Structures are given as structure tokens and as C-alpha cells.
Length: 152
Image (tube, rainbow, N blue to C red):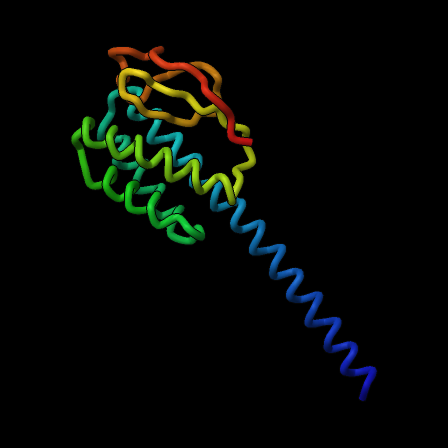
């Protein structure tokens, strides 16, 4: 009887450890997918493409639904996805960047990201590349900005 209890206890611990590892892997996958959709929004805004930004934001919404503590970012992704006004999308993107950065403090993406700042828009964005491709002024001022930090 005692032996069976020990076996059951060990099996329960092993199973819960496996589930925890799966949850961690799932969370990492979700946050990486979320970053990729964030990057898609960034790229669309850089190209002055409001429709592509809205579509990418819809994809980000779907990716963030299962991410813990992502409510603020989810609401901002929704705002971008429901708008075809690039000026409004860019305002929401500035706030989305802050929300995603906050999320990345506790749930780190696999990629190192550079934090860039646009002094004209007074707003930040994150990118895998150290090269400046400004989502706030797009084609009008594609290289306006500077790198201010990194997310690792």
C-alpha cells in the first residue's frame, strides 16, 4: 500500500512537471508569435500600409488571447485592427509598443530586440534590426530615429 502511494505520488509529480514544461513552451511560442505579428504591424506602418497594419493587428489579437497579462496589448491590437486611419494606427502602435515591452519584461521572446526612438513622434518601437526603419513617419522620414536600448 505504501509502495503504491509512493508510485502514485512520483507519477503525479512527474506528470505535473511535464505539464509545466509544456505550458512554459506554449507561453514562449505564444510570445514569439505575438512579437512576429507586432513586427508585421511595424513593417506595414513603415510602408504606410494601413490595411496591412490592420490585418497584422488582427493576427496579433489572436496571438495575445492566450498570453498571460496581455490585456492592454490586446486592446491596442484591437484598436489598430479596427482602423484604416494610419494616423490613429500609429498612435495606438506607440502605446502598443509600451504594452509589448512591459509584457516582454516577464515573458521574453527568443530574439534580441533593439529599442528605437523617434524624436519627432516622441515614441518608441522595437525591432530585430539595429537599422532604423521608422513606423511613425514611414516613407516620409524612413531613417528618423535612434537606438536607445535592447530587450534581451
